[in-house]
Image 1: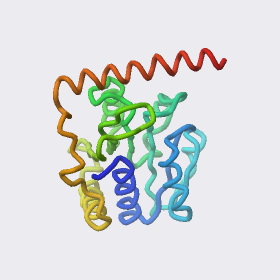
Image 2: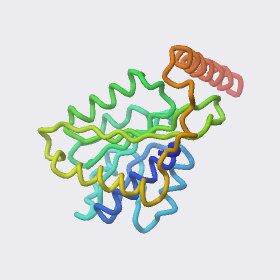
Image 3: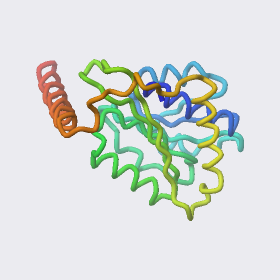
Image 4: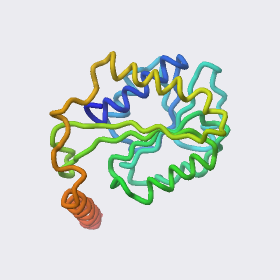
Length: 210
């Protein structure tokens, strides 16, 4: 897709087209524009706190129960492990703030698949600094599920609806969106160094402010 936000928007719109309504469980501190997108769809999308108690609310049959896991949250990232898989239809994981080969991404994917939950990974690529400035714009959507799970019969419908959203809303990536340096060893090394520098700086800032 043309950006990370367009990737998320395409998936949410596809869920609405397939199920008619969406209930999102999200941790506090999820990315501001993601929450703004969901808030703008009030009446069709409901947002509830990420907690076991909230998960027990019985949604209508026409509502997709989505667990939103956001890599940008500062606290409570691992709280998804406390939830019951029986109260979740699909996991939506924004991996933007983690390096593509992050062990945390692997652990979330393994948890979802072990829980027999389909997972959709979305991402904004090629961030150059902590302000989120991008070289060009590029996003992606990856669907994963086990072929033996019940979701294997319904997820292809969501994949097709997402493809239609990308096509109908004009959010597909174009050649100008692809940075020429991604995928090289130098890019991977610079990205890893950048992420480490952001973590160090954030921790120093937190200590100073406290």
